[in-house]
Image (tube, rainbow, N blue to C red; front, side, top):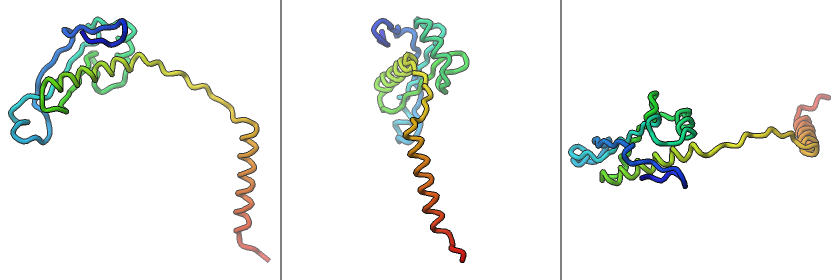
Length: 137
C-alpha cells in the first residue's frame, strides 16, 4: 500500500513495473543489465477518488497518455530496486500535485500615491532628457 494522503491509499497491485535497459553512458553494465524501470499506472481503472482522477486526466503532462495511463521512466540509479522506489516517489508527487488548488489572482489597482510618484518620476526624467538636447540659438 502506498500512502498518498491521510485517507487516500494506492494498492501496489495497481502499479505495473517493467525493467528496461537504461540510456546513456555507463559502459558494459548499461548494455547488459536492465536497471531502468517503466512504471505504468492506469488512472481510470485505479481506486483513487473521482476528484483525483478528473484532475489527473485534465493535467497537461507528457507522462500521461491519451488513454489515461501515467508512464514514468526512472533510470537515475544503477540498481533496479532504487529506480523502482524513485518511480513510485515521482508518481506520488504527481498525484499530490493535483490536490493543490491554486488561488485565483485578484486584480488590484495602483494607489493614488504610487500613480502620482510614477508621473512625477516621468516628468523629472523628461526634463533631464530635454536638457541634454542640442541648444539652438
